[in-house]
Image (cartoon, rainbow, N blue to C red; front, side):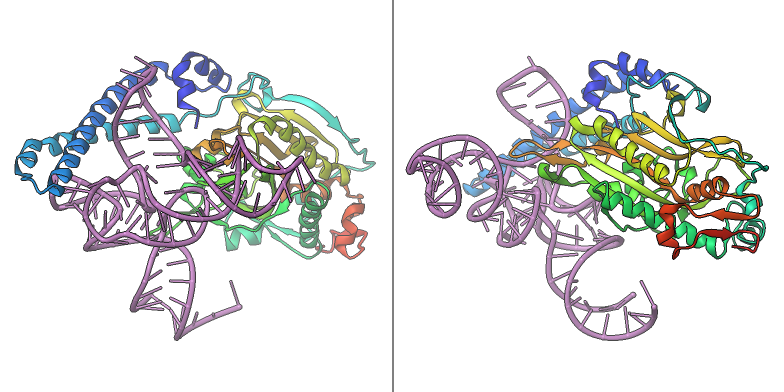
Length: 427
RNA sequence: GGAGAGGUGUCCGAGCGGUCGAAGGAGCACGCCUGGAAAGUGUGUAAGGGGUAACUCUUCGAGGGUUCGAAUCCCUCCCUCUCCGCCA
């Protein structure tokens, strides 16, 4: 959620910046809501004040042993008038809140204009795209010997799931362990384990609700529960409605979880293989930092994610998302895209974002420095990395043309020293 | 799932129809004391909103209700603890 006070001061410039992400901020509607709010609030509070004053007088009179009947009579239909005023005010507030909650974060000045991923801006490239003396397969073909079984997954669940077998499964597990260990031991993150089912407040806090309910898996039952679409949700919400001591900052968490996404609206895209699944593994990095530090933290966090790709020696590039491709809550996002030989293109494998105080305001995540007033934190997160896609990248980049995949050096300790995976035999 | 006890400010904890936004303590901030610190001591210190301001409104787990007036009474729900049951 944006700062309403800042919005009130200059709605025009906010509208201008929101244009960069293709969001049409209705200034007229905002002004109207704002002026209605003002008058209704003043009216309601005036009545409330009257009631408080008179009730207090009754209390005093009673304590003094006086007759309170005339005072009570004086109140008359004040209660009813107050009810009406309150009802009107609440109704408007609901409308106002709905309007404000639907407004995405302001893109940072460094975010390029643009409509979709075509307009994202490349920042850098790393690594050498491998030159095969054979036709590189994509991961689906590599796993066709039985290691990756999409048909069985479709039988037991549906499309966009996978059953994996043997060494590939271990490789995925090794990747996750390697990532977590690196972030904990080398980058100073604190590992957490969190629930995979969260309530609506948590999804609201990080911005998936109310706008993106269709992307979530909702759990049937009386209570409103959802499967997490990313660890960002439970991990960031640890600090919802909390005031942490300033000395604790920055807070840096790493968390490995499965992620569940319905990906509604993306049918027809990436239907082949494991690129876009309803369930996938991810190691997530989350930071909660002092407002002055968040831009540094974004660079740092992005570098942490990059380091995993570098250690795995996977070629990648970094891109800044343009306004149109920017997520709802983000002020700026840098994507890491890994090279996939089977597809002959770079594909997103990590997304690192600075949300400034947008999420923190929604969930009232604050800190207090010394005796000062509590202040909103800045939140950031990034994949460090998407494990399923990293697995694909390893399979495709490390294939040898004879149905084998070489295990990257850094993963061998996690694979019991294994050097190659024999994909042909079902891994 | 059953029985009982609870959920109050940054934290602990008192209050159980009116003068309560809430005693007391810890913590924190600023003084004093000290060569400096610790200890001691004094003062201050809930959050959020509206208003140029004076000032004012809201909030004692959440939501309803009773009342002129609710932290306090009633109802529903959520959560925590203890005991029992079930169970990886």
